[in-house]
Length: 247
Ligand SMILES: C[S@@+](CC[C@H](N)C(=O)[O-])C[C@H]1O[C@@H](n2cnc3c(N)ncnc32)[C@H](O)[C@@H]1O
Image (cartoon, rainbow, N blue to C red; front, side):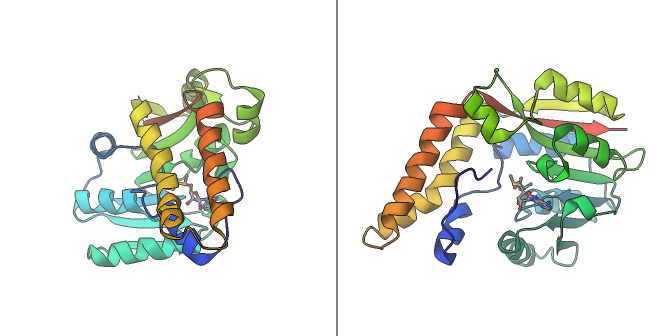
């Protein structure tokens, strides 16, 4: 959910996500609940479309035992972090990562994760339709997506686009695509605030350690603008829902 132009240098790119467990407003407890409801059985094939650095996929596969996983993302830097994490946890034999656009991915899986990546499939409604053919009958999907908690200002609508629905609209879109909603929960304010804070924290720390760097002023401006945008434009306006869907 990067909104402002990021600074492109390598050390700043690495700092960007350094303090995030995953790239979604999600506590560890909440993730455990979602993994329970996803009900991944030993032997299951799990796909994570828009996996980022694959933290959730790795936890899902580790929890299930004999499951296998495929993570797909276009971000080469995130994928190299994913591969390193898989190796550290001795999961590199079970989980593979592919650098690819999910809109062209034509595999199937018993369990699918798609968290914060519906935009890669055309937005909420299109993603729910497209993903129905990725999960065979009897399968489940964890779908994490933004929704309007309250009516957006013009500034919020401009940032997040026309595809975002209110929560009731998201649930209607699930039904229209043939999904049954096994579980629904939304990110709480503390999960959101922690998500936004950890998103900035890597570069905040870089700035504190590199105050004399010629890029410091740009980084400070970027951080301040990002913080203002969250507080003034979309905090409490954009929600994030986690749905476990079956069909
Ligand atoms: C908000 S992040 C969520 C990452 C991950 N699901 C998580 O929860 O940590 C969205 C991810 O979608 C990926 N993405 C965006 N467009 C994509 C595309 N067309 N194909 C594959 N991945 C894409 C981004 O690179 C990013 O890693």
